[in-house]
Image (cartoon, rainbow, N blue to C red; front, side, top):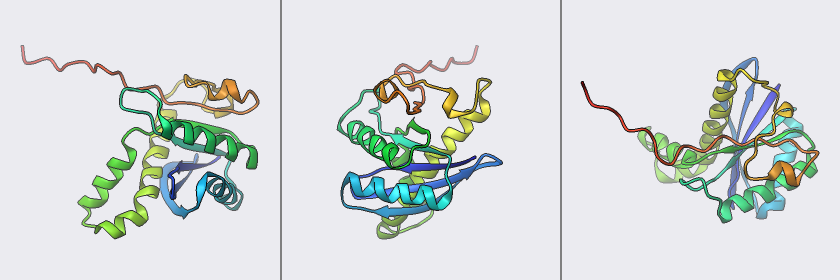
Amino acid sequence: MRLLGVDPGSVRTGLAIADDSVPVATPLRTLRHVGVNDAARQVAEAIAQEQIDTVVIGLPLALDGSEGQAVRRTRRFASLLQALAPIPVVLWDERLSTASAERALQAQGLRRAARRDVVDQAAATLLLQSYLDSRRDQTWPKDPAETNHDPGGYADQHANQHASHHAPVPSHPQRRRGRR
């Protein structure tokens, strides 16, 4: 099974690709587009070119797990993409993936202009790798068509479409205990 990671943005959308046989995400390319319709069309073309079986789209939840304008845009993008390429779509929590990608690229010494060209595909790679890692650690079915965990309601709104959503990070992480 071939998977496509998508980090959608308002001007650029990053793509990453992976194959189940070697579950390692690699950057594919960054698409430049005008509007969400153009972005969905270009991603649908990439799906056909790369013979993708499942799409993993980054869902930009707020740190507290709430949904804002960016999540609404992403859900609209996912809906448009599903109409153009009727394959399973997984919405995946991508909190801080772009910030993490930016820091990693900065640590490699890339200048701002060079980072701008690759940060979106680096973020798509991070989110796709996160998805792959979670599937490797699961004991329940690995086929996205067999899962329907979507607290945001995307799957309920699109009954014949498949959606998934990474469980939110707890808002109150456990504190470390000191030495005894």
